[in-house]
Image (cartoon, rainbow, N blue to C red; front, side, top):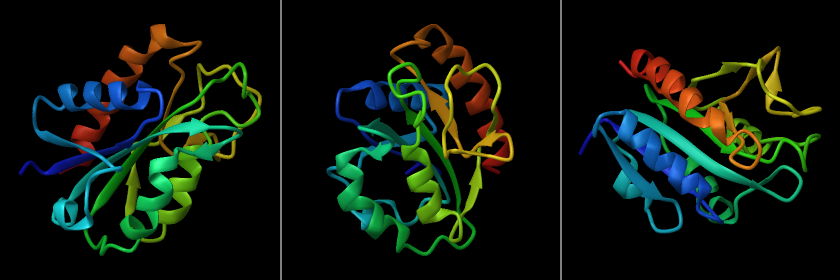
Amino acid sequence: MNKIAILYGSSGGNAESVARQVQYLFDGNADLYNVEYVSIDEIKDYPYFVVGTSTTGIGDLQDDWDGFLPSFAGMDFTGKKVAIFALGDSASYSTSFAESMKVVYDELSDKAEIVGRVPDEGYTYDESTAVIDGLWVGLPIDEDNEYDMTEERLAKWVETLKEEFV
């Protein structure tokens, strides 16, 4: 078992693809889990989590997380750190871009140390509840309209996480 668990829920495959890219950027030092199939017992001993989700509808959490998040949020997060990423469509849903990460953040922020916030710079959207005081609560990714920026955004974010996950 590695020290990092990457948990993802994906409807169309993009969140899974991004989760796999994150795993690669951690140089094989992270284990990948689909929340549709993982149990709390499998992940409870990890000190570090990267949590990823698609955003469906108007800022909604991806369906597989609906069943898993309450159990996950019920874990003991003493001494654990969590980073969040979410996919969204900044053009079609510019008033709720990547808001699924705020759902995860709201469930975990009083239980775990949330790391990996990124400045609200370089994104094209109108508004999002996932931005607090000029910082995203995690990393927003737009594979529909800003796919050419994903690789660079992920690389910078994971480098930051490598420093936070110590």
